[in-house]
Image 1: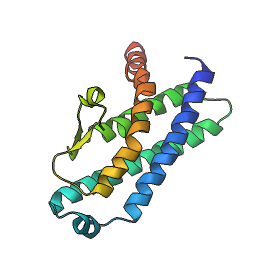
Image 2 (image 1 turned 45 degrees about the horizontal axis):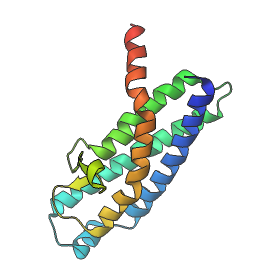
Image 3 (image 1 turned 90 degrees about the vertical axis):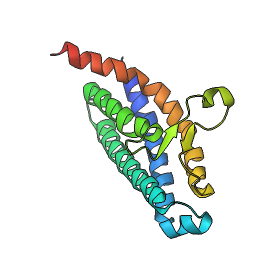
Image 4 (image 1 turned 180 degrees about the horizontal axis):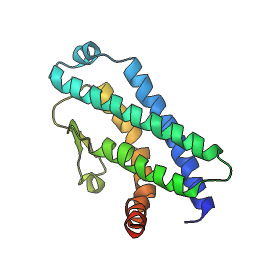
Length: 162
């Protein structure tokens, strides 16, 4: 890929991450386990698991945003570093959003056919939690489609360089 395409993708991802960080921060700064329980009685351990992973996603998105800011300001533009960063963001942010390692929620692959949101929870959760995921899911899906290229291309480059 040319420098201008990678640079453009970097800017797009940087804006996406900035928005995602804001949404996650707003939610986490204003939500406690007690708030979730008051909104909907449920499994406290499950709520803790979800909030724990949302915090991890926030950290991954913040780290990705910081790296995007640094690379975007570098002169000359470091295409290799940008591609590696986009690959990392794809795995740490995008894939973790749809399929967290702790299995707190999952992606319903059939949602594309039903027109519903793809993030599903194993148990009932408060509407405020569902709303955060609904708010972010469309942009996460859009960025996932844009960055899927790095899943194969970056890995191929690494194998060829060995």
